[in-house]
Length: 295
Image 1 (tube, one colour):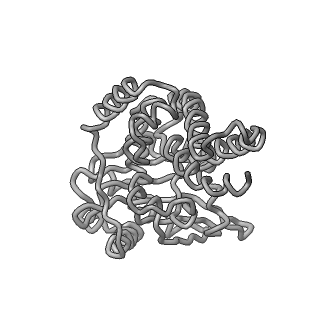
Image 2: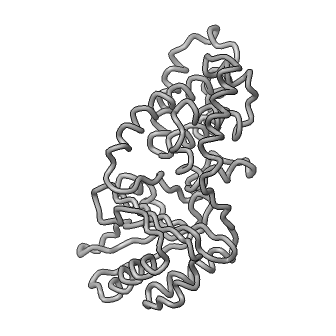
Image 3: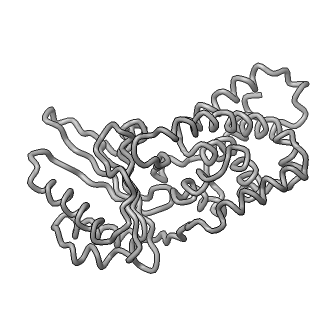
């Protein structure tokens, strides 16, 4: 049974991460599924893949109900756990990797847990209505209604189509250099007029409490922060990498004991050669898992 579980573990992680928006919660769900899998008699499982997907999806629905309640009272702006691409080892299908985009995961927050499950299973993982109904113990008619309701909820929401390439990373480097040197004019030229800045500190570290949309405010906010770092007594380092399929920047600070602490994981959405959205994940609980890679 171990080999069968290993065979489908990547799929279970792919579903769980998109359902929860956090790597740690997704791992917890898959771990729970593995325990139930090994405690279930083999003769009771007619189709291993269907059984695993069904149990995973339903556990994720239950977990997401609890998570949503916590997110309603979350301090500041909630962002998904931002994953460096090197950690996303369970994805090998290029056609669905776009659904790991931070913007897409935020979009899914507009859906109820069941709507999210139906939408993901049908639209991303390409299960038909009959298969979805069996996985969720519902009727085909009901699942089709839920799917349509989910699509209506998110169809008019803004989902950026970000560009990912070496040229995109070059734009991020240019933006970072301009921020560090305090060149507001260059910063504003690299941002789209309707750019947005999202920051998640979880109430544990400093972060912008609300989404910043005004291009001048974004420029002033970020140039002030980065320019002040140049005069800081501590040492900083920056690693450019891809994050959730987007160009990104991992920012770390060396403390007085010469130990490195990961401060922020940035990711950038690029449209028409300019930055349209900046995501700054600063919540220590959501970035601690990447420290071993960059520190």
